[in-house]
Length: 158
Ligand code: ATP
Ligand code: MG
Image (cartoon, rainbow, N blue to C red; front, side, top):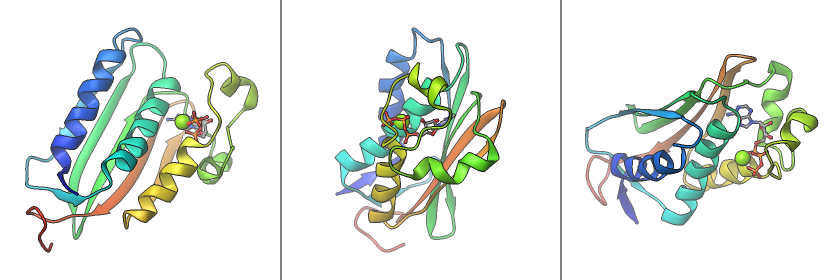
């Protein structure tokens, strides 16, 4: 299905804003208004974005800011989700996309999860023709980036 990807992201953020109220997390949207159509499996794409945003919330302190960006970059769109949370030590960053991997078991246990979310997200991003990676500064925050091929009109060529 061809989806207006900006609208798709806005709807997901709207849903998270309602559940984020308890934790006092603020969302900032930097979503291009240019036409951005992406051919997606809606359930799977929702699973990708949900996992990344729930991680940003889980691993952030109260009052943190989460920034969701959508921009055009050549033939792809680049989506990024940034948080002001605990960050990931450099030596652990490559492993977060591995199945069952969780940084710091003791710390991770308190927030719950299986360590599968990002492994699934990676598989599903690849199935959509994109790439996914992380940039993080330990103690300062984390940004997850992913790309997807897009078109400027529904069902069209780029
Ligand atoms: P699940 O998603 O299966 O519920 P999970 O969130 O622990 O469990 P992943 O989403 O795969 O698993 O993430 C793997 C690990 O990467 C996490 O346990 C956490 O240690 C680290 N991580 C992921 N996102 C962040 C983030 N935004 N900030 C800090 N650490 C993160
Ligand atoms: Mg997760």
